[in-house]
Length: 316
Image (cartoon, rainbow, N blue to C red; front, side, top):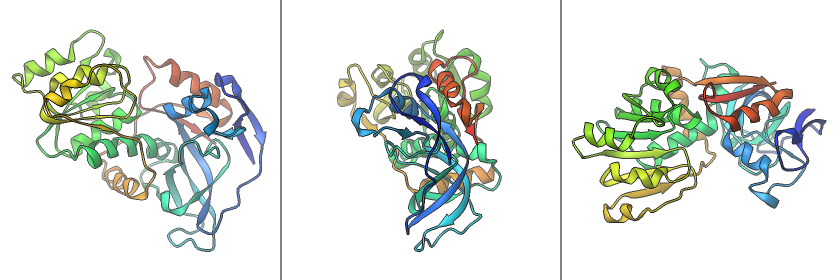
C-alpha cells in the first residue's frame, strides 16, 4: 500500500511516499480503508523529533482516522465489513493513518457519525476527544457555570466551545481578531481578541470581580499562570499543553489544576457521535489536502495565523 513515511526527524520535507506492507488484522483488530485523517500538533512534534527514540523510524504518522472496515479479526464482535468508523490512534505507535490502510484494536474504534463526511469525521477523534476529556471527564462542567477557553478557533478549542455550550455554560474565549465571527458562530458568548484586549480585565469587569468557574487552555507558555487570577476560588484550570510561569496562586485559591492527555477509548467517541448527529457540534475544517501533499499541511499548521482555524484535514 502507499504511505507517507518519515525516515528521519526534521522539517516537513522529511515526508516521502513509499510502498509498505498492508497491515494484517490480529484477532481483535479491524482493517480500515483510510478515507481521511487530520493534522494535530502531536503530528508535528513527532515529526520534529520531540519524542526522540520512543518513535521508531521509519514511521507513519497520523493519529485520526475515518474510514471503512475492510476486514476483521476472528475475535472481533462489534464491527463488520463495510462499517464506517472513526477513531484516534495511540501516540508514538509509528503505524499511523497517513496511509491507505490502518489496523486497530476494536476497543478504540467507534461507529462514524452518520451525518458527517469522512473528512469531517476525521477532524473529531483527537481534538474532540481531548476537549471532552478536559471539560467533561476532568472539569465536570455543569449548567450555569462560566468557562474560559483559550485558543477557541483551534482544533481542540473549537470543539471545546461547542461542548461547553451543549453543557449549558456561558463561554468566554480568546482568539485572533480575524476569528471572532467564527467562534461566535459556534457558540462563544464573548470573544476576546488576545492581541489587542486584556482577557483578565474584561472577564473580571463582566463578572464583578468573581471570575470564571473553569479555564481551559489549549496554548502553552504562561497563559495558564496568567489565567489563575480570573478563576474563582475552588475553581478549576485544565491544560492540554505544557505550562510555564508561577502557579502558586492556584494553591492560595484552592484551584484544581488538571493536566490532560487523551486516552484512546470508545466511550468518548460514542458520546461525541450523539452530539454530532444531533447537530450540537459541527466540525470546523479550515483546510484540506490530499495525502501526497501532507508536507504542505504540516507547514500550514506550524505557521498558524489567519486562515488556520479548526482542523486541517488530509484525504486519501
